[in-house]
Image 1 (cartoon, rainbow, N blue to C red):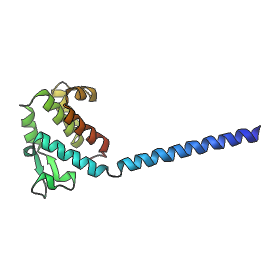
Image 2: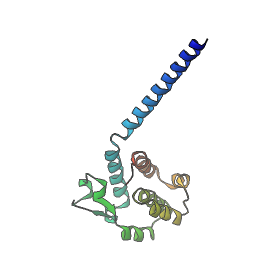
Image 3: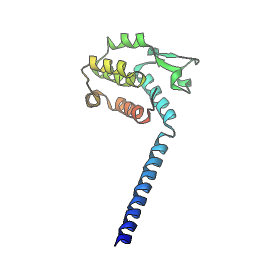
Image 4: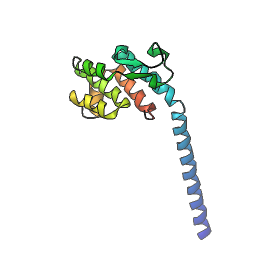
Amino acid sequence: MNQQANSIRQEEQGDIAASYKAQRAKIMNHYANATERFLAAWIQAIEHIGPEYFECKGIDNFNEATDRDQIRPDWDAIEQRINVCSIGEGVFIGAVMSFFNGQWGAGICHCFGCHGIGDAANRLELDELKIVIELMSSHIGW
């Protein structure tokens, strides 16, 4: 009986190890191209918000960016933009800016009555939601 119990435990441990390895491989695969996916979504967000609200560093046009640090938000221009935009636009801008600076983005969202991701999801247009989802699923920190 002890030998049979040990065999079952070893089999269970093997299953757990295999499951862990499979999950780890899935995560590694997901994040293998995260930098490129994030940049593509960041560029989509810039196109949606307006390129005039971003600064290009070392490039002439935001579409030339090969790194997200080449296109950063123009803090002052964004602050001016949120003074005249709709609730939906403001929430989208805040959600996007939260990937650049969490406190700033949350503050923008809060100004538009958005207090969490569920609130944001309810206020975003489908194309905006898709951009935020891609930013979220490929974000590995700024």
